[in-house]
Length: 128
Image (cartoon, rainbow, N blue to C red; front, side, top):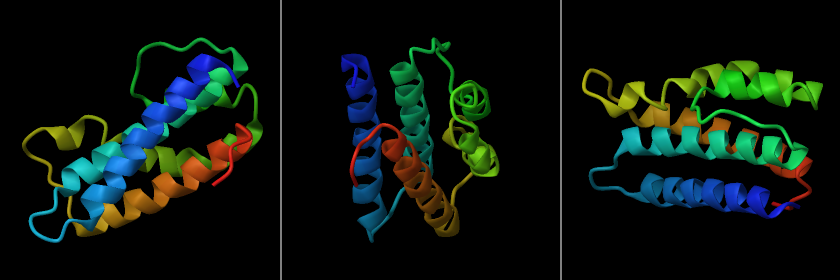
């Protein structure tokens, strides 16, 4: 695995670990943060995959644009299009007033993140 790919994976795992911690908070949990870090974890795993393939990408947060690049190398990424569309909104929209994530949002985004994380980690040859 390329050194820069490893750095993307480490960054993604940082978001994953933040999610796990914040999701265990019982008093005043920040569901916006949980959803944001789920999106960030997935974004960074997609970038890790692209990095490993030697594919250049812009500095973006658009999961669908990243998906389109991943599809150049592995068509099975298409199975996750709807999941990525659903996560996409947590990159920006929920970081500003007017939107508020609730416990169900957090639960769903965590499930989505875990599924996408496992999928990309498998493609990178990583265990668990």
